Length: 403
Image 1 (cartoon, rainbow, N blue to C red):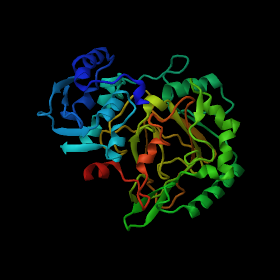
Image 2: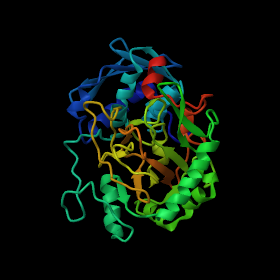
Image 3: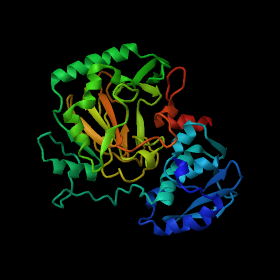
Image 4: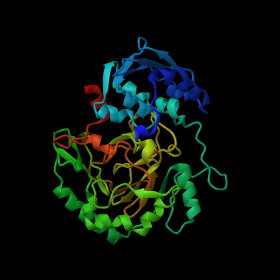
């Protein structure tokens, strides 16, 4: 899909087009974020051309060359173009070993991603002091509100539009949850490390822990969720037509997620992230994920939290427990409840605080806009995470420190 755009000259873009875009950005970089940015250099692999970006108040100063860059990263010209068009992401370049660290720290490159999106596309960086969410009457939005399937559809659509997520109670019956749990145990027993259809983590003693199974749609009870009118009706709350990302029986058509305590390696416990974090925002989004809860969404169980109003913004990399990280909202969902969230909305999944459970278990169904597709013709952007023989999905900080 990159070829659908006019080719960009690296030097010409920075000389003429980027200053125009910077002058048109409606909001400055938040001070709390901008002060963390250290000079970043981008060097083009084929030509050796380079530019350095540095913070200048609430905007960015651009200099030719890389002598002043504390962190210098080399990428292909095509990858740079894809970043400009918001088709590529910094995490994908790092995981896919398509970026070379010449000096500095890859985590600094990652920290710049919200600013790069702000520079190139005008996408705002999340500023908690500037978020102002309102309900249909103009009153402050109650971001903890839960709904039922009988509630007013326009109220539900408005909440989703503002907050970027919605929590709906009592969608599936206890009998249906029992049936899905039975299928889940069948999936758990058949998954194997390295099968390229599952994500695994490790505990401190080295034992493997199953975190996700990607082929849940091959089980009849899971596959039937694709056509359930109660669930499809939630996707119809979106302002654009949405379709399931994969066929019901394909890998990633339906995913099963388990939270487990004590996982010290892998991606069982996710930092603040967006679901298009491995690329494809401009070609796929809006995306969305529908979660059917088979276990409770509590702090003890390993909750998922959403950042209200963030789905049209960016957020720098942060762990759930970082001092400056946002707290977010954790709907107190119980088995049978459902959440539906835009993939662009920032969310986090810290580890369980309990050792005994029950822990969060969820069935995940992915959606994207009806005409969305992989811009390079690939199967799934998250495939860059697969490939290890032991099934491990390494944490970004570890990947960045090795390369």
